[in-house]
Amino acid sequence: MILAQTAVRNVGVVIFAIVIVGFILYLFFNLLDSKGEGGAEIELAANRKPYFDDEILETRKLDQSLMSGLVLLSVIGIALPLYWLGEPGRQEGYVENTIELWTEEGAESFEASCSSCHGGGGAGGIAAFAITDQGSGEFVASVDWVAPSLTSALTRFTEEEITYTLNFGRNGVMPAWGAPGGGPLTEQQIEIIIVYLRSVQKDADAVQAAVQDGLVEGARLEWVSRDEDLSEQLREANFGLAQASQTGQGSLIEEAQAELSEVQKTIGELFPAEDMAAWLAEISDPSHAEYLTYGELLFTNRADAGAYGCARCHTAGWSYDGANDLSIDGEPLSTITDEDGNEVPGHVQGGGWFGPNLTNGSTKKQFPDSDAMIDFIRRGSVNGERYGTAGQGGGQMPGFSQRVDDDILEEVFDEELGEFIEVEKVWPASLTEEQIAAIVAYERSL
Ligand code: HEC
Ligand code: HEC
Image (cartoon, rainbow, N blue to C red; front, side, top):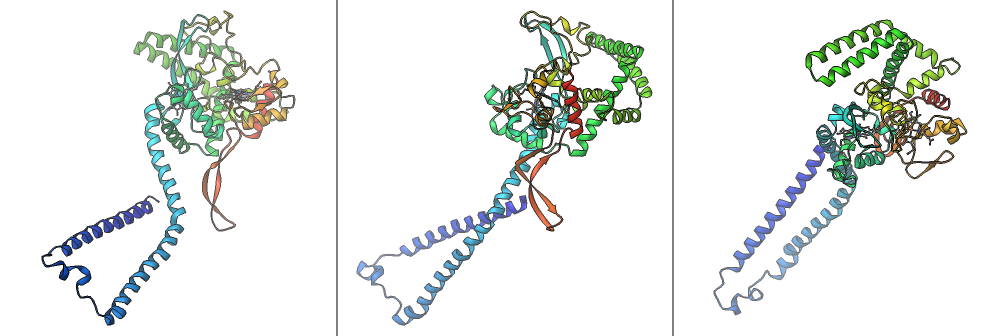
């Protein structure tokens, strides 16, 4: 397409050059013609000079004029419709060319502005953040805040919703990038980054594989939590590393890391991935006694920096491991107080944060019918649209089922027709229907 583009441009340049050169030649000969005057006007005036006689005028000269008229007419008659016919192809070429250029440009600005927190290629990472007391505004602790992977963001949010997040940032941890939020990027620079994001989105298999990896990791921690000794060992090793990190001494940090790795190795051996996968398959059956645990593991899934889970928005502290109440300087999270001076109740799963509190049966009130709740989680909220019995959507609750984007057309080969056809882009689901049902069952039990 780029080739076709440059070919069209070259032809244009050549035609332009011919016209310019022709015009200069015309001017030149015209000027030459007008030189050499010197006699009386009565002899030299153009209308006094002898001209072709009638015979030549009516045959050769007339034929010549008619012929050049005909040639011009054919050029206009054939070339214009041909040009017009080629126009859609040229426009498509233009769009494709722009998208390719934007993808490259977007990759560069992503690496420059976003990858420090979201990881290279948007794979997910961490952002350094200072927690302050909500009441006094005093510094509490520096934490590593999970910055979700963006490699499946376009399935959970529309490009408009992502633009909103980029414009205004989120929760103070994700900075505002767009001019409307006081950020440094123009509207087009934001658009270019989003076009780049399209190119790093995972396919359906990769998404499901990541969700499963996160579930296996969660299952392991669930089994650790059922063993008091092991939990204590892991907690101490984590705390040791947190303490060592505060000292900033390389040797101490290395030692603590080695200790933690040792504990993790033991855990890996005790709970191998195959066993965890088999257990998950068992409890994913709605009639299993631990079905709700399956829902909880989906809710807290850490894969791809929490991208597929719910806890990062619905559980305070989850994003910076506030769940482990020894992780902040050894101070339990519950010493943080809110605006009214009340203690913030540590880590309450689903207790609400950026997204509403989902505990105390509140989801049953919002959605008396669980099918309606499933539907809401499949599609997410829409800005300005009401949901449930009293919900007001802000467009920030992601949709976890697949998303069709009718602005993006893709060429796919149609086996039946035997030709390429254009279809709307379908971004793969983050969660399967069964997984969404399990999360809903879990939430409704909170
Ligand atoms: C200083 C670190 C930091 C930088 C730089 C940063 N982000 Fe973020 N971003 C975050 C964090 C942390 C979150 C999650 C916020 C939360 O937990 O509410 C986030 C959230 C997001 C989200 C919402 C994703 C979701 O699934 O909820 C998008 C989209 C996003 N960032 C895109 C970008 C892009 C594009 C850039 C570059 C222009 C960027 N971010 C730069 C830290 C950062
Ligand atoms: C990126 C942050 C984010 C993530 C991730 C997220 N939510 Fe939400 N959720 C919200 C926000 C924000 C709302 C409120 C609606 C709005 O502002 O659009 C909400 C609303 C809800 C509600 C309605 C609650 C009420 O009482 O109104 C339910 C139920 C819900 N989310 C469930 C989930 C589930 C289940 C998941 C995981 C599969 C999830 N959420 C993941 C941000 C999030």
